[in-house]
Length: 320
Image: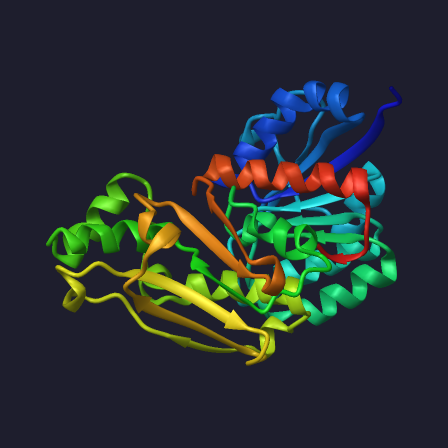
């Protein structure tokens, strides 16, 4: 089998970035043998420092100051630019994503902020450059909901999508149903590594709405920046009841995403712990549901690795 070399530049060396770098180091040989694609990490870039990679990643003390991103991509011959940086409001992630696409690299991203605010620009740039934007890690970590939305249901008459897209919310609502106070439920989720230090976006419904906006963009071509969001927050008043945080959108009501707290049956009601699920209403084809998928840095990194392999194997242009 002929093996294709895919030099990768990674931006972000937090928990997800470290796991992604580790996967490329540990499993690149296996993937090359199985898929004919050798994902070779050639550089890692932090906010203010960077390092070339030839085997093991050097200790942080040996990294140097960042160089111009376009120069780095050209020097390393990068075919993929992987983003595992925190969401930001300064536009840095968006600027670097556009630069990478213009330089001929596929964009693999776990970062949500610029997908929401710069979707149209990223799509235009990616299509012009003939490069893909892969975003599985931004739509549910290991849950392959994005794969279904962009390709698995291609040609299906998808009329609506709804699901439990935030594992912290599912966990906390289960604790509330048992009578646990909200503050204690959140603290338990944080101790277990399920909830972030600031769980505000999880409890308010903002994170679930973000993921649903991205799925709707893949399904129907909506611009996430133009989507109206209506959310219902999780509060202590729900203690003792059985509820799920359900994000939903329909083709008949374009540009609107709602996140509601609902009593559910079936797959959504059966979720446990931090599990997630998404259900697609496919008209004559019936409902298609995908569930499971761990929420963790390792799971997000695996989603990024899957997307990197897919970009190398399938190519494509635009968000996918």
